[in-house]
Image (cartoon, rainbow, N blue to C red; front, side, top):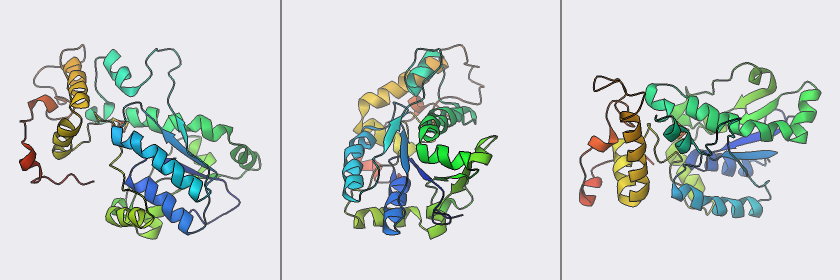
Length: 263
Ligand code: SF4
């Protein structure tokens, strides 16, 4: 379904502060679709450029009279860690994506936003009237087969909408739309220690944010020297899954142009 399908349903936007979700907001504004809630789940380990983008987007939201986005973070019920990085560090591990699971994004991204949605009066009203809330997710048209894996109660509470796929917006088109709206194009949003990072992105992190790169390596070392390490035959060697980031050769700046970061 599209975000325009039923205007009697509240609309909640999942914001990652990256290209896709920002383009989704621009497209919604162009179509006169005003969200009721915009939430950004901060793992505490986003890239500096992502945090720097937040005030830029806040100003744009004010300019177009959209509701301001609300930042949220997963709060563990008992443990004392405050970020995904600390969560991994305490357990001598690395994000679960490195092991082929998605617990890190489910807990720190998906679940973190839920309390804000549950408290929104428009949502409470819709649910009590037996209506679903629309949850808009910025999967672009190049990820056409990618959908959100809703489970359990979520299926009764939400209709999932992928506006960029409905509009046929590819990632490159999203970048153009953002630039045409007068906004800088944001960097790809992800934790600075995300196992999904491509080699070119790892080299880029080492070049632009050496301190964060070293923190990522420290996390990986903690895993490789910790209680979960299964030795050199382990399937997950480090943050690169089948390889440890620390084993990547240093690439000189002039060689980086050979790589495509993919935005
Ligand atoms: S960006 Fe990567 S490490 Fe961070 S929550 Fe998402 S999958 Fe996990």
